[in-house]
Length: 126
Image 1 (cartoon, rainbow, N blue to C red):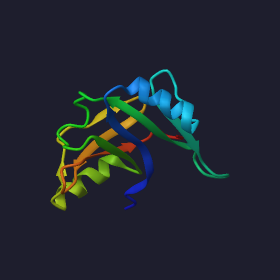
Image 2 (tube, rainbow, N blue to C red):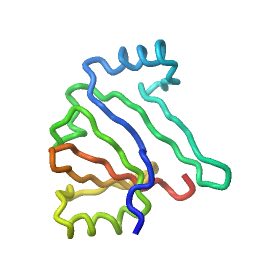
Image 3 (cartoon, rainbow, N blue to C red):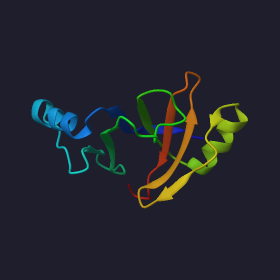
Image 4 (cartoon, helix red, strand yellow):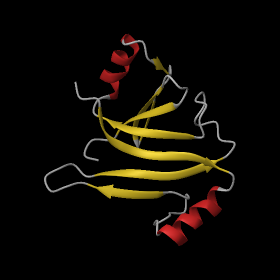
């Protein structure tokens, strides 16, 4: 079974997400959107197009809980529903909830150092 297929996003806490996003826009040329993040589309000829998201979060966000780090990596996965039971069977600390939205399916696992890792199955064709 194919597990991770790429990086879906990099998310991190910031004291002032808007100001930090503006710094990245002004100094590194990121095309920062109104939600203070940037989208990096990719995909080669004959492959399914995709994207990688970059986004600062408010310093007091609980989105990365129960992880203990100030960042979270989002990995694209081929089949979230198939992968989560395999990770549980391997003894991984899988968060007991998933989410499904127009952006796709999301699940999480906590790595051995306490970092919350987001697993994302994108909608079909994305």
